Image (cartoon, rainbow, N blue to C red):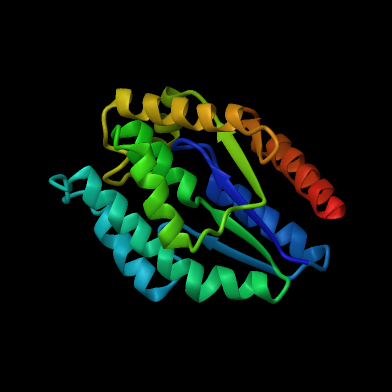
Length: 207
């Protein structure tokens, strides 16, 4: 039984650590789990990630940014994600195409219809079965990023950009409550961790 779950949300929500915990817990429950991330996940995709995240690339146009994310995603889907799902496995991804819609669509205000068309081509129409939104106020999230010593080119955008990103995520989640589940990522990580695992196990038992 294949199942594809993604973790989404604004900066500082704990997506990476929560994705790892979820993948480990599902593996212990005898699921065949692949943990991956965006951008990255393959050798080619990681090279694109380095370009996207480099703090010195401040002149990058938003359309270039989106197309690079899409190129990284296309390689990841075809080389890693789709084969694992075709073999009946579970994929846990730290971000997927909804990040591009939130950041380049809502954040940079690029045309969402155009982004959806390009995304459909890049992913070969592959959508997640479940999207977990780790939501928290922008100020808290960015402060976590700063205190954690991890800061990249996208983090450095102005606060208003990150606010639009957060609002974009919430808009997408509220428009599709069947596939999206929102969590308060400002709560203690252990509490969020258990909520996520319970939701995912419940969905897996239904499918």
